[in-house]
Length: 201
Image (cartoon, rainbow, N blue to C red; front, side):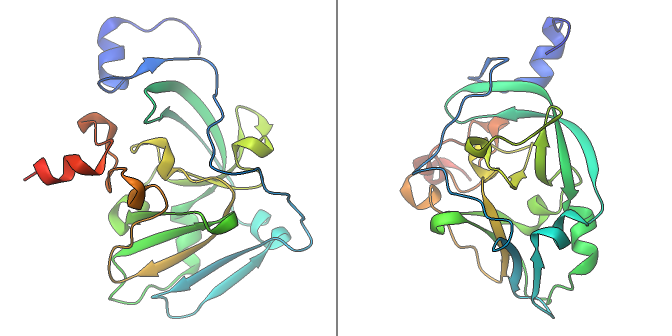
């Protein structure tokens, strides 16, 4: 994590209720899926002018970027200065033509896991489809061969074992969102649980 941060820097980078760690805990629902590069693919579907499918080789041939960002888990730990490598959503979306009714995206992963994002959240300039973390290929338990990284939201929105994106007109809550987690997941507002939505204006 580098040199210790001053108190004012911590206030600006660590959301309320979070505790710093230099470890990278593994939190998953279900077993870690097996990866086969010959059968793995990545699909873009839904409210798009043309659905797309990438093989593993085709996806890895997309433009690559590196970024530094913080990571905040709803279970109250935060890990600062993570180096991610992968495909920026900005670059991926150059190949996609959305239909006018596309306002949300359903992130589709192995074993039927999903999470949901508003299009404005998904298209933020720091959202990435990552395959490396801190100079190493992602460990299988951390999402190899591909995970979404959405630094401004709690980490369950940074879904592991990514297999596709489905653009939709209406919001569709994902796996944890229908099981009591907040639909928006802003760590700075401590949007942890769905019951908090009833209290918001």
